[in-house]
Image 1 (cartoon, rainbow, N blue to C red):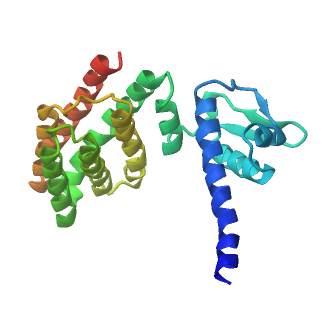
Image 2 (cartoon, rainbow, N blue to C red):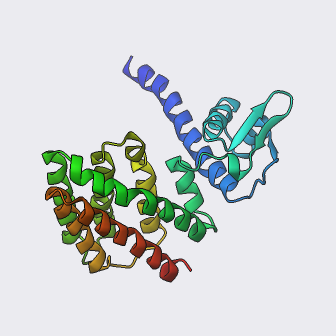
Image 3 (cartoon, helix red, strand yellow):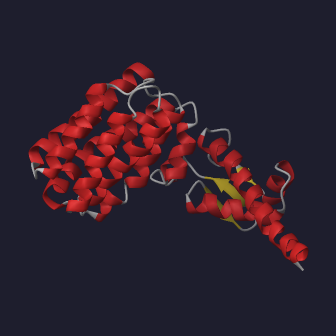
Length: 243
């Protein structure tokens, strides 16, 4: 009985693995331009090329459709859409684009977005953050300090993402809060594609501490100014690390 049950469970698990593998290959290929806009992809051809079932291929296409990377039409097939149609706020699309050759331009575009949103979010957080959120910002800022030496970028990233998510959430603006995944994808992309110094600049780390202090002290102007400097410095770093 146990072995039969295990056997039944293996097929969905295997299909999920194949589905993820297909997406991990096809998604970046589309965002990198290997399949130009207007390219028609047929489900049966995808299944054959990637050695998966048609069911797996159809499921992958549905995910890509949800991201507006492709459009499926009867009697035509799956058509690759132009970049203007893509859901550029989807964290997976961001991750795929950052893996491509256009990484520098993508990072600059996302950093401009951060520059427009995060300073305002920090000011609002200083007005509206709960005591628990203030404590969380302090905790993560200190975590960034503790992991900013000795090439601990992955550990640093955990605190960095949590810090910025907390600021966006504490702004009490649901639109800003939804950008938490976008900012997380940007920070992770910079780390995983070596668009970070081996150890974060201590000035940047200190600025995060300053934001946490300003939010805790309800000093909106100071929180906004410190966060604006963080995003401006992030853009300046791109000129050095991703020219």
